Length: 322
Image 1 (cartoon, rainbow, N blue to C red):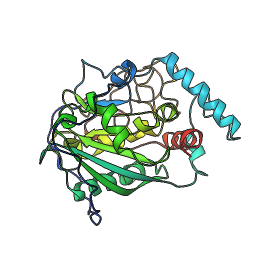
Image 2: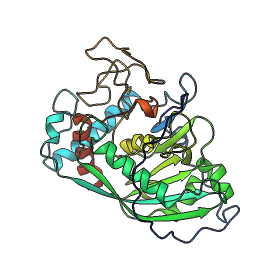
Image 3: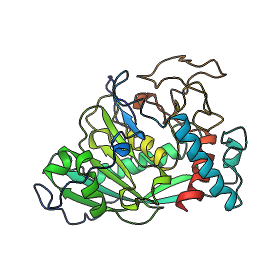
Image 4: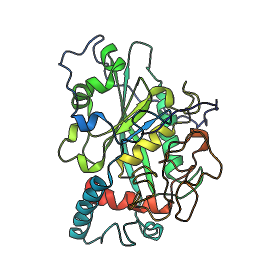
């Protein structure tokens, strides 16, 4: 998840790629299928981004015990693949592991869920969002080139007031209808999200049990040039796709445990709000990684992934999405 706060910023303008033809729109009005809610665990969206700090669901991350169980499963899969564990340095991914990693190019199907003109984002805006993700993951805003890139494959448009107004409620209806591709294909949904949420994602280890629910959902106002003050450079998608690739929040486990399982992101007790200077909430070395895409800072504050995060993405990809 990620949180919103308050200062206006101009979106980073990226030249739009040529327009793609849209898929046929879904019928207007309520969907014909009955809404299907996700499980109680999924509805808390531990893998999401919020827009405010202090109250709500921003602390709904995995517990240290849950994360430890996932890491055990991940390491078993990596050992079977002959790739060695992700935790070679005391539970942490190392940036040096990224040097030999091959380039990963991820096909993207972008699903626009709208209510008439509301939320019906243009193909140019979609291309700016993909370009923003490529810049983020390619290290062009700062930090490491993670050797992960994205290529838009197609756009669908679904005109449904019900889906648009309550995407969490109808997620179990529209995702199975719209989802395209397999485990290595990113399905990215834009819609209206009420409350504090800017977006949410599924983790890669959930794909096998529920493949049609796999994907990332973002508030359309968080896209580059969008309407959400402080959060309209398109980095909510960057953040959520980080979860889709297996990254935790930088404040996972707080100051204890194994944190986010990445060696070059200092431990962080609490998510950041705004763009604090010199924030240092844990006694271990290093100040809080407030500029990291996996924190909750303003979009204007976010600049980078680390090499260790890139290395973790590649190992998780090999285990769950290759």
